[in-house]
Image (cartoon, rainbow, N blue to C red):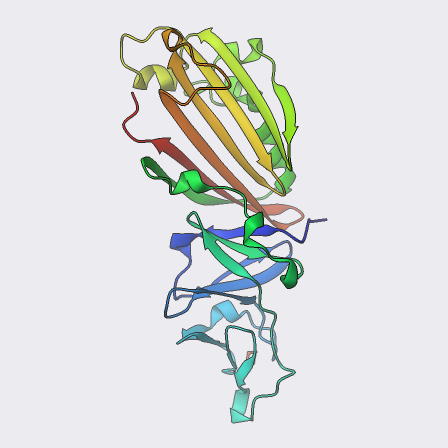
Length: 276
Ligand code: FES
């Protein structure tokens, strides 16, 4: 059901701290917390004794203690104290997951640990880039994660769903161009010489008339979508290939399957500072 040898976002950096956070990814219960030095620990969220979620326990130093009978586990999932004070037994242990923090997200590798490679992380550098301002949040959504991908790769719905902000009838007048680039799929729509949608009109300088508008949706497997959106006055003569000036933003969408019928939707927006 789910691509396994992949990095999936577990949470925003600000969600993960010294209090253990439990979430299910691709049907696997996982607990994540920070060590004393701020580094990450990701373990199976089930105590090897009676399967109580370890996220219901407490972090002690760099270890985590089960909240039922007190088993203590280290960052590798090894039991270092047994319930009742018996000597630790090496075969009583939990699974540890590769975890990494990059561009304000905590990522977990679900598949074979030896295949975890930081070079495979999707590029979210716009989230921390110099001269850009970015932030976002998370929703728990009760649907198959692929339905969100479908929603975000075809923005035709903006005309109707977002009619009071970024929607406008002209979106339908211009076709989507679709292409592949390496492992990604890119859907682009260039809308030249149209009136600004309500949200842009409210924020642009009053003397701006018609604009060129763009939507470039990039899908990065398994479930990341970065959308490059913006407008510029027609007089700027920007193009789909070169539209770095004026009002430009990146909408960040990271979707992590929880189960077959639910997912975690991490959303964010990165916007250049000091744009008109
Ligand atoms: S269930 Fe965790 S120590 Fe018993």
